[in-house]
Image 1: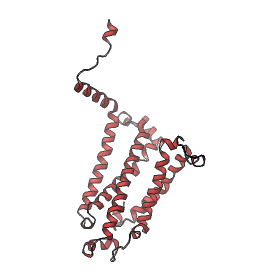
Image 2 (image 1 turned 180 degrees about the horizontal axis):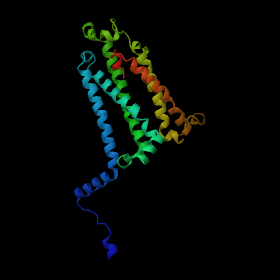
Image 3 (image 1 turned 45 degrees about the vertical axis):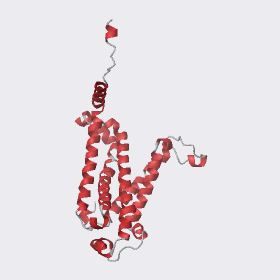
Image 4 (image 1 turned 30 degrees about the horizontal axis):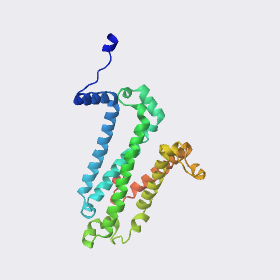
Amino acid sequence: MLSQKLIPTKERNPLKRFARDIKYFFLENWKRIWVLTLWISICIALFTWKFLQYKRRAVFEVLGSCVSVAKGSAETLKFNMALILLPVCRNTITWLRTNSKLGSVVPFDDNINFHKVIAFGIAIGVGLHAISHLACDFPRLLHAKYVEYEPVKKFFGDERPDNYWWFVKGTDGWTGVTMVVLMVIAYALAQSWFRRNRTSLPKTLKRLTGFNAFWYSHHLFVIVYVLLIVHSYFIYLSKKWYEKT
Protein backbone atom coordinates (compact mmCIF):
# COMPACT_ATOMS: atom_id res chain seq x y z
CA MET A 1 0.00 0.00 0.00
CA LEU A 2 1.05 3.61 -0.62
CA SER A 3 0.83 4.49 3.09
CA GLN A 4 3.22 1.69 3.93
CA LYS A 5 5.74 2.89 1.32
CA LEU A 6 5.72 6.37 2.89
CA ILE A 7 6.96 5.00 6.22
CA PRO A 8 10.66 5.98 6.53
CA THR A 9 13.05 3.07 6.64
CA LYS A 10 15.69 2.87 9.34
CA GLU A 11 19.20 3.32 8.00
CA ARG A 12 21.20 0.25 8.96
CA ASN A 13 24.63 1.62 8.07
CA PRO A 14 25.86 3.53 11.19
CA LEU A 15 28.14 5.82 9.15
CA LYS A 16 25.35 6.82 6.79
CA ARG A 17 23.01 7.29 9.75
CA PHE A 18 25.59 9.50 11.48
CA ALA A 19 26.16 11.53 8.29
CA ARG A 20 22.40 11.99 7.88
CA ASP A 21 22.00 13.15 11.51
CA ILE A 22 24.88 15.60 11.12
CA LYS A 23 23.36 16.93 7.93
CA TYR A 24 19.97 17.51 9.58
CA PHE A 25 21.64 19.07 12.62
CA PHE A 26 23.47 21.61 10.45
CA LEU A 27 20.35 22.34 8.42
CA GLU A 28 18.38 23.06 11.58
CA ASN A 29 21.08 24.97 13.47
CA TRP A 30 23.27 26.65 10.84
CA LYS A 31 22.36 30.14 12.07
CA ARG A 32 23.41 29.33 15.63
CA ILE A 33 26.55 27.54 14.41
CA TRP A 34 27.95 30.40 12.34
CA VAL A 35 27.21 33.00 15.01
CA LEU A 36 28.90 30.90 17.71
CA THR A 37 31.82 30.15 15.39
CA LEU A 38 32.29 33.87 14.72
CA TRP A 39 32.08 34.71 18.44
CA ILE A 40 34.56 32.01 19.45
CA SER A 41 36.93 33.05 16.64
CA ILE A 42 36.89 36.68 17.79
CA CYS A 43 37.57 35.64 21.40
CA ILE A 44 40.48 33.40 20.34
CA ALA A 45 41.90 36.15 18.08
CA LEU A 46 41.73 38.77 20.85
CA PHE A 47 43.31 36.42 23.38
CA THR A 48 46.10 35.41 21.00
CA TRP A 49 46.84 39.01 19.96
CA LYS A 50 47.21 40.25 23.53
CA PHE A 51 49.08 37.09 24.64
CA LEU A 52 51.71 37.57 21.94
CA GLN A 53 51.88 41.30 22.57
CA TYR A 54 52.88 40.78 26.21
CA LYS A 55 55.16 37.89 25.32
CA ARG A 56 57.39 40.44 23.54
CA ARG A 57 57.53 42.79 26.54
CA ALA A 58 60.19 42.94 29.26
CA VAL A 59 57.63 42.08 31.93
CA PHE A 60 57.31 38.60 30.38
CA GLU A 61 60.85 37.82 31.57
CA VAL A 62 59.68 38.32 35.17
CA LEU A 63 56.11 37.04 35.14
CA GLY A 64 56.24 34.54 32.29
CA SER A 65 53.13 33.21 30.57
CA CYS A 66 50.99 34.18 33.59
CA VAL A 67 50.90 37.83 32.57
CA SER A 68 50.11 36.94 28.95
CA VAL A 69 47.21 34.71 30.00
CA ALA A 70 45.90 37.43 32.34
CA LYS A 71 46.06 40.09 29.63
CA GLY A 72 44.70 37.79 26.93
CA SER A 73 41.67 36.88 29.02
CA ALA A 74 41.19 40.55 29.93
CA GLU A 75 40.99 41.39 26.23
CA THR A 76 38.17 38.87 25.74
CA LEU A 77 36.43 40.30 28.82
CA LYS A 78 36.38 43.80 27.35
CA PHE A 79 34.74 42.45 24.21
CA ASN A 80 32.23 40.21 25.98
CA MET A 81 31.28 42.75 28.65
CA ALA A 82 30.18 45.05 25.83
CA LEU A 83 28.59 42.33 23.68
CA ILE A 84 26.54 40.77 26.48
CA LEU A 85 24.29 43.84 26.61
CA LEU A 86 23.14 43.54 22.99
CA PRO A 87 21.04 40.33 23.30
CA VAL A 88 18.97 41.87 26.12
CA CYS A 89 18.27 45.14 24.29
CA ARG A 90 14.75 44.08 23.36
CA ASN A 91 13.82 47.09 21.25
CA THR A 92 17.03 46.82 19.25
CA ILE A 93 16.61 43.07 18.73
CA THR A 94 12.99 43.53 17.65
CA TRP A 95 13.96 46.24 15.18
CA LEU A 96 16.80 44.18 13.73
CA ARG A 97 14.54 41.14 13.38
CA THR A 98 11.70 42.99 11.61
CA ASN A 99 13.40 45.83 9.75
CA SER A 100 16.62 44.35 8.45
CA LYS A 101 17.74 41.40 6.35
CA LEU A 102 19.85 40.15 9.25
CA GLY A 103 16.86 38.20 10.53
CA SER A 104 17.36 35.68 7.71
CA VAL A 105 20.89 34.79 8.86
CA VAL A 106 20.97 35.68 12.58
CA PRO A 107 18.84 33.75 15.12
CA PHE A 108 17.50 36.77 17.01
CA ASP A 109 14.94 34.59 18.79
CA ASP A 110 17.84 32.88 20.58
CA ASN A 111 18.97 36.16 22.13
CA ILE A 112 18.62 34.99 25.75
CA ASN A 113 20.53 31.77 25.05
CA PHE A 114 23.31 33.77 23.41
CA HIS A 115 23.30 36.10 26.43
CA LYS A 116 23.91 33.04 28.63
CA VAL A 117 26.67 31.76 26.36
CA ILE A 118 28.47 35.11 26.55
CA ALA A 119 28.01 35.08 30.35
CA PHE A 120 29.74 31.68 30.40
CA GLY A 121 32.57 33.15 28.32
CA ILE A 122 32.88 36.04 30.78
CA ALA A 123 33.05 33.59 33.70
CA ILE A 124 35.93 31.76 31.99
CA GLY A 125 37.68 35.06 31.27
CA VAL A 126 37.30 36.26 34.87
CA GLY A 127 38.61 32.94 36.18
CA LEU A 128 41.69 32.98 33.94
CA HIS A 129 42.40 36.65 34.65
CA ALA A 130 42.00 36.43 38.42
CA ILE A 131 43.84 33.13 38.88
CA SER A 132 46.74 34.24 36.68
CA HIS A 133 47.19 37.39 38.74
CA LEU A 134 46.46 36.09 42.23
CA ALA A 135 48.12 32.68 42.01
CA CYS A 136 50.99 33.42 39.62
CA ASP A 137 51.84 37.04 38.81
CA PHE A 138 51.77 38.44 42.35
CA PRO A 139 53.71 35.55 43.98
CA ARG A 140 56.37 35.74 41.25
CA LEU A 141 56.79 39.46 41.83
CA LEU A 142 57.03 39.00 45.60
CA HIS A 143 59.78 36.40 45.22
CA ALA A 144 61.64 38.03 42.34
CA LYS A 145 65.34 38.74 42.92
CA TYR A 146 66.70 42.27 42.51
CA VAL A 147 68.01 41.61 38.99
CA GLU A 148 64.73 39.95 37.96
CA TYR A 149 62.71 42.86 39.38
CA GLU A 150 64.70 45.52 37.52
CA PRO A 151 62.61 45.48 34.26
CA VAL A 152 59.31 46.12 36.11
CA LYS A 153 60.47 48.92 38.45
CA LYS A 154 58.73 51.54 36.32
CA PHE A 155 55.40 49.80 36.90
CA PHE A 156 55.58 48.87 40.58
CA GLY A 157 58.11 51.33 42.03
CA ASP A 158 61.78 51.18 42.93
CA GLU A 159 61.09 49.09 46.01
CA ARG A 160 59.78 45.61 45.30
CA PRO A 161 56.37 44.93 46.96
CA ASP A 162 57.02 42.92 50.12
CA ASN A 163 53.55 41.49 50.83
CA TYR A 164 50.45 40.27 49.09
CA TRP A 165 48.30 43.04 50.58
CA TRP A 166 50.24 45.62 48.54
CA PHE A 167 48.52 44.40 45.39
CA VAL A 168 45.04 43.93 46.87
CA LYS A 169 44.81 47.35 48.53
CA GLY A 170 45.68 49.20 45.31
CA THR A 171 42.91 50.59 43.10
CA ASP A 172 43.45 47.83 40.58
CA GLY A 173 43.27 45.23 43.35
CA TRP A 174 40.17 46.25 45.32
CA THR A 175 38.16 47.06 42.19
CA GLY A 176 38.98 43.63 40.77
CA VAL A 177 38.02 41.79 43.96
CA THR A 178 34.80 43.81 44.31
CA MET A 179 33.79 43.06 40.72
CA VAL A 180 34.35 39.33 41.23
CA VAL A 181 32.23 39.31 44.41
CA LEU A 182 29.36 41.22 42.75
CA MET A 183 29.47 38.99 39.68
CA VAL A 184 29.40 35.82 41.80
CA ILE A 185 26.26 37.09 43.55
CA ALA A 186 24.56 37.98 40.26
CA TYR A 187 25.58 34.71 38.59
CA ALA A 188 24.38 32.62 41.55
CA LEU A 189 20.96 34.28 41.73
CA ALA A 190 20.55 33.95 37.96
CA GLN A 191 20.65 30.14 38.13
CA SER A 192 17.29 28.50 37.46
CA TRP A 193 17.01 26.86 40.89
CA PHE A 194 17.38 30.28 42.57
CA ARG A 195 15.40 32.24 39.99
CA ARG A 196 12.43 29.83 40.12
CA ASN A 197 12.50 29.28 43.89
CA ARG A 198 13.40 25.60 43.59
CA THR A 199 15.81 25.62 46.51
CA SER A 200 15.26 23.90 49.86
CA LEU A 201 16.57 26.80 51.92
CA PRO A 202 15.13 27.88 55.29
CA LYS A 203 12.16 30.20 55.04
CA THR A 204 14.15 33.26 56.08
CA LEU A 205 16.78 32.67 53.38
CA LYS A 206 14.27 31.66 50.72
CA ARG A 207 13.12 35.27 50.58
CA LEU A 208 16.48 36.06 49.00
CA THR A 209 15.67 33.85 46.01
CA GLY A 210 13.08 34.10 43.23
CA PHE A 211 12.72 36.32 40.19
CA ASN A 212 12.94 39.58 42.13
CA ALA A 213 16.29 38.54 43.61
CA PHE A 214 17.50 37.66 40.11
CA TRP A 215 16.24 40.95 38.67
CA TYR A 216 17.66 43.25 41.34
CA SER A 217 20.96 41.37 41.62
CA HIS A 218 21.50 41.97 37.91
CA HIS A 219 21.42 45.70 38.68
CA LEU A 220 24.71 45.13 40.49
CA PHE A 221 26.27 45.14 37.05
CA VAL A 222 25.80 48.91 36.94
CA ILE A 223 28.42 49.04 39.70
CA VAL A 224 30.50 46.38 37.94
CA TYR A 225 30.70 48.43 34.74
CA VAL A 226 31.75 51.56 36.63
CA LEU A 227 34.42 49.56 38.48
CA LEU A 228 35.53 48.00 35.20
CA ILE A 229 36.34 51.44 33.79
CA VAL A 230 38.22 52.41 36.95
CA HIS A 231 40.01 49.05 37.04
CA SER A 232 41.18 49.35 33.43
CA TYR A 233 42.42 52.91 33.94
CA PHE A 234 44.64 52.04 36.92
CA ILE A 235 46.20 48.86 35.49
CA TYR A 236 49.82 48.45 36.53
CA LEU A 237 51.48 47.55 33.26
CA SER A 238 50.19 50.34 31.00
CA LYS A 239 51.02 53.95 31.73
CA LYS A 240 50.01 55.53 28.43
CA TRP A 241 46.39 56.71 28.40
CA TYR A 242 45.60 55.25 24.96
CA GLU A 243 46.63 51.79 26.18
CA LYS A 244 44.21 51.93 29.11
CA THR A 245 41.21 50.30 27.47
